[in-house]
Structure formats: C-alpha cells, structure tokens
Length: 224
Image 1: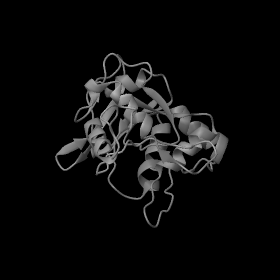
Image 2: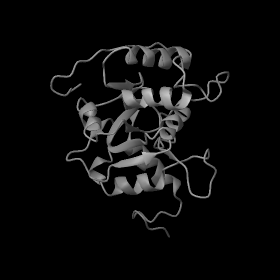
Image 3: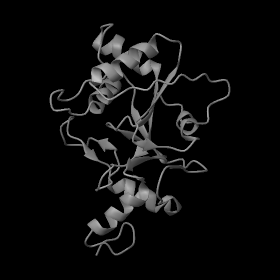
C-alpha cells in the first residue's frame, strides 16, 4: 500500500465478532493515539496499492472506495434517500452509476482499480455505504461522541438489529451526517469484493445490468 510521505502506520486486525467489540473498541484505541485517519478494509475486499492516496486526495473526512455486492446481483453499494421519501428510506444508486461507467467504458473491467487521471465527477455523496474500504478522519468520531452521543463510552457503530446481525454502517453514516460530516464514494476507486477466487467489480455490475434490462437497445440511456 502506497502511503503519503512521512506517514506512520499501525495495523490492527480484528476478528469477526460483535460489532461493539470490533469497531467500537478499535475506535477507542485509535482516539487514544495522535493518529489522524482510520483506513478500514474488510477481509473480503481487494484494492490496488494507490487506493489510500486516491481517497486522501479528495480531502474529505469520510470517503469510500466503490464496492459492489459480493454475490449476484453485483450492485453498487451506494445508498441514498430520495425527495418525497421518508428520511430512513434508502435505495441504491444504480442508474446514475451505470451511466457513469458507460462514460468511462475503459474502466468496465474486473477486479480492483484506480482511474488515472482522476475524473472530476467521480465523487458522489451517499446516504450510507459499506465500510469495506473506507477512510475516516478522527474528527468524525470525535464529533459524533461529543456533539451527538455526548458520552465517553459511546457506540459509534451499533447494528440495526444486534440479534439478527443487521448491518451497522447505516447508523454510523447517519450519525456522521447529523454532526456535519457527509459521506462520499469515489467511483473512480474500486475495491474488488471477493466471492470465491474472483472479486466482483464494474464488469460484473454492467453485465448484470445489460441482461436485466429487457428493453435495452445496446446504447446507454436509450430504451426501446
């Protein structure tokens, strides 16, 4: 992994288990140091060496590589709310992600990659996404603790349903947004989501989309 000049790194491997023991204890240990950033990657993602530098280049406190679902359908893990819908109603950004990759056809490919040069329109705000390949500045955790949860032993990450194993990412992004930290996904920085031996990527998404649209004429944006 490529690092900025002069950067210090500390690796922490967390075993599978309860979210409050894995994520929250890790955040507490992190805040006890003078480190600025957490770069979170899951065991089932792959990324190219320049991924961290690309995410840092946006100068955003909460920014993510684009990760597609691990199993079919290989949809982009970018959830957002829509006007006229309840604040807790999220849908995936499928259509605009498809059109964006059709404008960058050379990057409809398998596996992890970073686009060069960086497209100016690559960054999009999200309601929430997976923390599978995510860069988080310490200010996000501090502000959630001090401005929102207002307790030293707070839980930044808490499953939607701890008993059934519901996801923890949505709640974290809502907390961050409530204290002024918008989440973003960089579509030009893709982390492969490993299923078996082959990581899903933009190629899998476009392949799924092309056979799912029964009226597709073969031209992006045009339907019969």
